[in-house]
Image: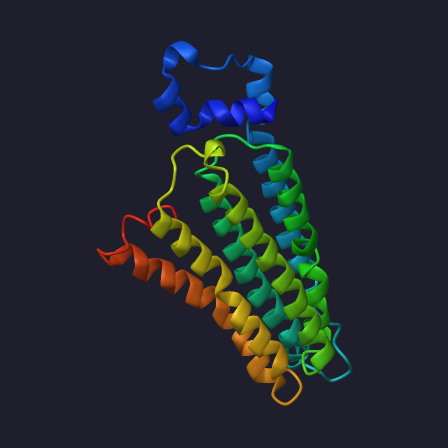
Length: 238
């Protein structure tokens, strides 16, 4: 069913066969192949993830003789973990949005790739709680890095799948566009590995590297969109 819709969506198929030879696709088949429900579900999961992240920040109880400003220092690690994780979740949501702005139809494999992507994504609040509670513990920083590496690898797999199935897209992307998307998606892997390696000797620097990932990503996207040489290929990035 979905392979028929995918074939129908392909610009190459239309160019070769013409409108008189189009494969018949029923409205029900088109609804099943629409990405709308997948996107609604995914947006809901992202919203829940961000909501859970902020729940870790609680106003501490005041000890005898302790001022509020003094007690707020107790939640500084949790707040830092929240800010870093919020930016990272936002980065992955914008990447997901950019990818699916090009997707016209989905098939069984795309659905399951998206679900697998949401699996480690849903663990981000747990990993954030770990570094918020034990920011100087290498194990907590390793857990955080491992979760983010899993998220990134599945993002790369999803982008690669759509690149190899152009019939699911609105338009066929160029080779340069595919490499640009792959590069911006996979680039954080190197930083995550470095952050995990230095977690034991320099935990504060490891945490800083995690923070710099979304900052660098948004700066890179802005640069690519401003550069005339890459402006057209980067138009779908956000």
